[in-house]
Length: 321
Image (cartoon, rainbow, N blue to C red; front, side):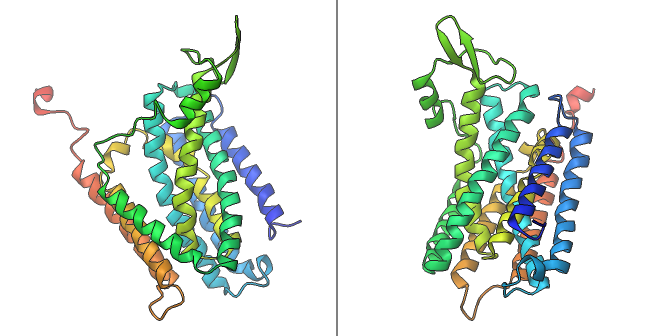
């Protein structure tokens, strides 16, 4: 077993997630610490891209990709998945607020959400890769879905927040268990006078699991438009999910400032859907062009958002006087 195999990378993934869990122990994560670790995980992803560049022929000896093409595809897929994962953070913040999740429990809930997302995406990548291998027309279904998702995201009213209090996972949990009013540290079940009771933490984890399904339905077809190499798809997803918790604590107080992010993601999904439609034609969009489009779109969206909301945190004139 080596790092060049799925088994070797799986071991590396477990070690990286263990490190991520260790550095957020104690339940409270400072912004400074979260920022340092966020940068660390991004740098680690780019170091892995360098590793791919020098070792791709050992990692996938039967692949038709050159070392340069493989490394470029990984970076493009990673940045695509990382961009889409930021949208997860908006929903996580909304869920935490609606269910009044204590701050000390949020790192654990985020970890469960990330691990659940990784397992779910691993299964979907395996199925998706096989479908695309056996049935080329599935690509056009993926493309249509991405175009529809991009249009839906474009038309979505950012002021209208989704209410998770009556979501399907909530109804299922409440159907089979009585739920306590208060959280009991990290416990999902507690023993009461009339038997076992579920805590609100179980409800939150169930809702997070539902959102994992929703986001996987967008992200997996999107990255298959960048590369059909399962190993690159899987590793890009792993590195995109790594550090998602740290990124949440960095951006937690700033999420409302990214007012143009959803528009940017809508454009990216639509662009990736178009790229998927054009695969195999004379107008096929190169991966390097996709990489430039993703980087430029996200950079413009973040810059424009921060500029538009630059005065949001400044005290008013009356308050200053």
